[in-house]
Length: 308
Image 1 (spheres, one colour):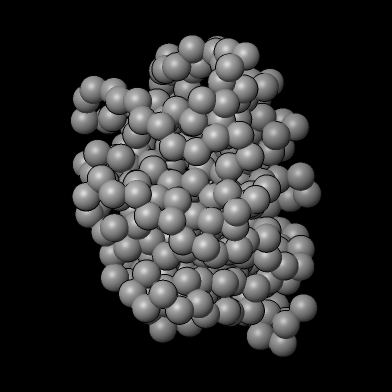
Image 2 (cartoon, rainbow, N blue to C red):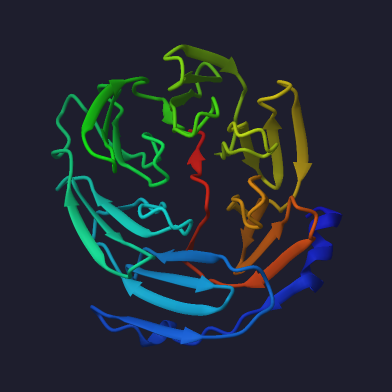
């Protein structure tokens, strides 16, 4: 464990949340607590129970049962309120179930038929592909390399990029406000991006082991290529092309980056054994708090992908 990370243990703010065990088989529970940190909502998902837990540091607590066996979680900001919504995709049925944080309503949407032998797999790749501030439902098929996108502003489209062995990593790499189609090839150690602004395809060699966490860490409006592995963040600046390494976290940490302080820059953040720690890029300092139990999966503001 790094010295920097070890010192953070004294900075943790303990948040009281006490409704987890009160969730009914088909219902939800809510509680209220108090803590002096910036308003943000954090999500946890327990795959065994099929329950989502949302903790706002304002601070309210909500527990919701959403999804069914075989679902793949696909949380994102589908209603454009800046808060990640609980969501799950059922690959076999081709259906999405979303709980909108703005209204609290739950909707099930049918999109993309079940996988075929040629398509191999249905991977959810939600992102804002049309630039309207709301995440669009989208699926990537490894077998065919096809991206099926249902724009929240209306209409649907199909594009092709990548194939078996690749990892989809959509993000706004060209800074036009729209997510670009992108894949990482572990075999070639290459990131390939189709820029939505120009339509040009660009490839960059940037080896990755661990988790892929592309986001705008420099504040230029463009997503940077980034990798998290055992507490080390390797970020390739979209401005300079240079790679910077930062130690924030430990071997057992899970990356949960996102713009937690609202300055337009993604902050380094990790979840470790029930504890969240966020290094605020605005220079305010470091936020730490406890939220989560054994078996829970932390959900960050930025999509995280496995490098292999």
